[in-house]
Length: 92
Image (cartoon, rainbow, N blue to C red; front, side, top):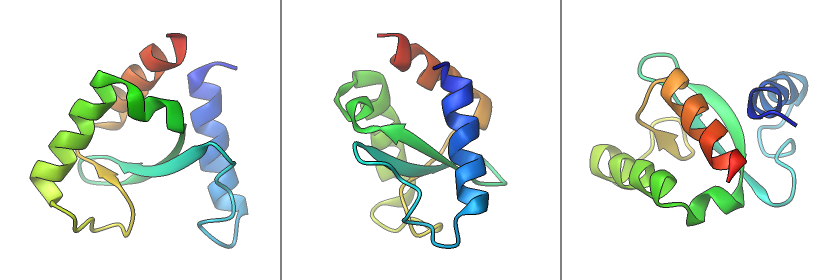
């Protein structure tokens, strides 16, 4: 499945779900991405092992510390950059 399809499905699942935590499949986690309008994405846990994704986590820690305004992990980058990075990570 292409990463764009996977990310789109995560967004549609979020809209269908009444509870934010019930639409995250086993082996995945949710992040919020965006610079002004935050969007929620569900990504595989395997992303956590990749140095590129770890760089994003470091940036999130530097910007937000352990306080994330959305109540979940917030990644401080544009949606386009995140989708591009996710596409590269999914191909590895």
